[in-house]
Image (tube, rainbow, N blue to C red; front, side, top):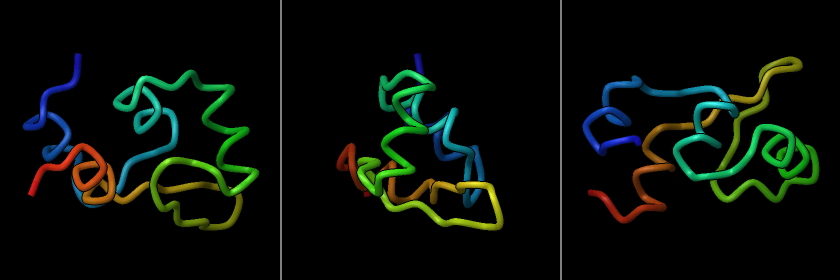
Length: 64
């Protein structure tokens, strides 16, 4: 179970797998959503990696 404090402690960005776990999405589904530009929050593409801004996750769950 992810707490708001634990999410905040991730830093500025996290990976898709961690973001998916926080949002209750499975790993395979998360990567499929990312590939189709349908992930629930903004993603940053760096080479072959996807990075998820932690603030975007916090905004989605309505935490200031």
